[in-house]
Image (cartoon, rainbow, N blue to C red; front, top):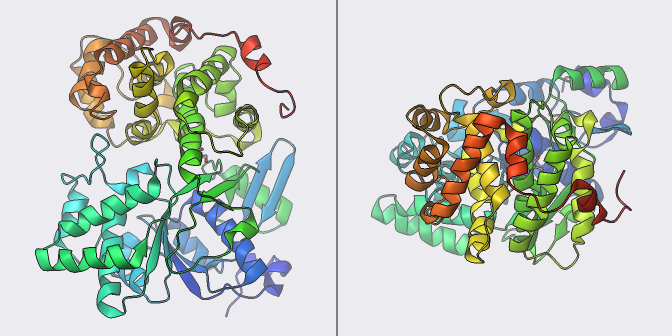
Length: 508
Ligand code: CS2
């Protein structure tokens, strides 16, 4: 086999055996997968062997598969912290291709008897479901296409069901489907969507597919955590200057990494614990903790920061009033709704989050975290907000997060939320902008978005007090700015006392 410049530049890699035979098909060959699951799989294979090579499937873009082929399936993970950088090169991928260019190949790969796990990092937006109901979005042209065209599925759910049908017809070997996205109860969520898609097939096909799904698949839940910013030329230059080779597709990541997995693999699994993964029966608690305390607070930091002109998360959280709002939403509005796992010390967890968010070397952008809010916020806000409302309280900072999101993505006429907000992508941007253009006030907009369009689900759509408060915050942001809105939210403690609540041991 010809040796790529990357391989030639890494003598250590040449001494290692080639990646093993594939056992995993991974949908979503983006940065997160390459800096997370691939690293754990590399550790498992190095420690214990096993045919757990990964076939990486990118959704639309050919950039990463093309570069991986040029680089013998290798790339560099650049671990970034203010203290310095580390470089590793996982060797786990056996192939890489793009689903949009080769849909039949995805079905065949998932359908292959050697495939024992199909894993996904396709983002919250990749499951083609309706946030309001949690069901498949049957208005989505891609889902309609996939139901009508068995040979060329475009959506991950369609690809999985077509692959499972192939398995059921050709060999019947079981397979686990492992969601690694930030969705509450992601195993069951994925299982529900897969079953729903299968049930919409013509009757005989549906019965066969559902019988196979029920008998021969498992859907472990997992909680994944590692902050992975978008790759920039800065990281390419870092690899070139520190390591002496050109890598077209390095991935930057923070040093922190966590993976909690439900041990429910019907066809075996790699020993991911060798890379530090934890198999636990408390995944639901870890997911709540992560999706609410980390991701939910992250959204607040991103939207308020973007409106205040902050380009990055560390820049945003260095603003005292945004840090205060973040600490307050985390502790007083998200935490009460979480079943904290036995081994977690919440004070230490909170301090670690702030340390991670302050990682200036990482350059994690507010516009990246603020993207896709219409699907992310649905996972983060409704349950904690409803619980607080039911207890007679008003989730001020959850309403403010929603208001800040709308001010970024769907500003009222005449308000410019600034360049970071403009850079946020969102599948609902056009629809929400249309609603904003016809709205007379914050309340008018909040009523349409939360009440009529169920952006945060059906239950919150009925809570007029929450809608009213969100509308008031929208107006305050538009007239007096995000910091005035934080003051209006009446955060219950000062920054000094919020910090004093915390142990000092993990503060940098
Ligand atoms: C972030 C996450 O973009 C976002 O919404 O909250 O991507 C976050 O960085 C990761 O989940 C960390 O594990």
